[in-house]
Amino acid sequence: MARVKVLKTYKIYIGGAFPRTESGRYYPLYNNNKDLIANICLSSRKDFRNAVVAARAAFGGWSSRAAFNRSQIMYRMGEMLETRKQQFIEELLMQGANAKSAEQEFNNAVDRLIYYAGWCDKYQQIFGTINPVASSHFNFSVPEPTGVVSIMADENSSLIGLIDAIAPVIAGGNTCVVLASESKPLCAVTFAEVINSSDVPGGVINILTGKKDELHSYFSNHMDVNAVVYYGNNTTMIKSIQENATNNVKRVFIYNQKRENPEEFQNPFYILDTQEIKTTWHPIENIGVGGAKY
Picture 1 (tube, rainbow, N blue to C red):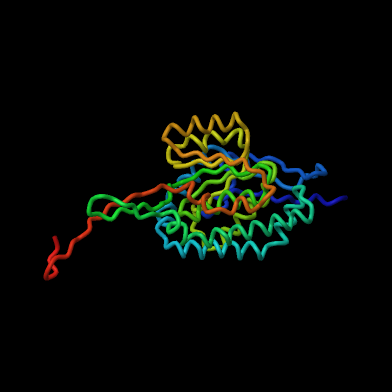
Picture 2: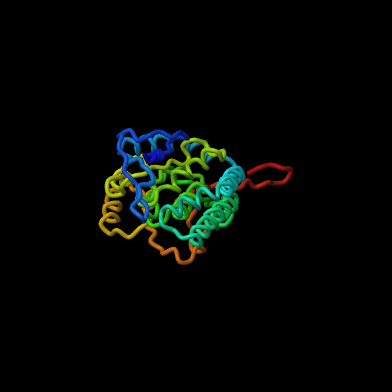
C-alpha cells in the first residue's frame, strides 16, 4: 500500500506563540498540479482580536526601544532568513514559482530587511525638522510611530510581499497584525519561525492566514487599530476599508504597485506613512550679565 503523507498544518503567529485558529477551521492548499501540499489555518475575528491585544501590549516596549536596537533586531531577522534559504525557495517552488524567480524573490526579501534595518536610526533625522518661529522658542517636528497597524499583504506574492508590508512599519516603531496571501501563505507562516528566533519581542509582528473577503472588515473597523495598510486593487474591498476606517479616523494606505521593479519598495517614505508628526515647543532661556536667566 502507498504511504499516506502526513501534511503539515501551518499555524498562525500571535504574541510570540504559534496557536491554531480558535475557530478550528482550516483550508487545503494545492499546488499547480492540484496536489494537496498543506493545511492552512482559517483565521477568525477572535484570532484578529487576540492579535490586536498582543500588538497593543507590545507597542510601548517596541516604540520606546533605542532606534539602533530595532535596527539590530531587524538585521538579525535578515541573518536568520538567509540561513533558511533552501526551505523558503522550496516553498516558493511549491506555490508555482520557477527556480530563477524563487531565488530572486528570496534575495530581495533578505535585502529588504537589511535595507530597512539601516533606516531605523536615520529616518527621524531625515524627516524631522527645526521650524522657524517668531517667539523665543525652539520648535521641533519629529515623526513618531502611530501605534498598531493592520496589514493585508499582497495576494500575489508569498515572501517579498510580506516583507515589503512588515519591514517599514516595524522599522518606525509600530507593531502590526498581518494577513498573509490566501493563495500563497506558506512563506508567511515559515517567516513567523524566523521572527520567533530573531529577538523580536512577542506581539510586535503577528501573522494570520485566511480569507480577505471574510477578515478585511475586522482589520479596518477595530477601534484599537491606528492605521490600515492594504495591498491590492479590489475596489469593493478598498471602499469598505475606507468607510470602516472613519469610525475612529484610522489612516488608510492603499498600495497597488506592480512588482516589476523591486527597488520601488525600498523607500524610507514607506516608514513615514505610518508615522505621526509630533511638534514640540521649548522656551529659549536668555543668559544675562553674571549668568542671570531672564
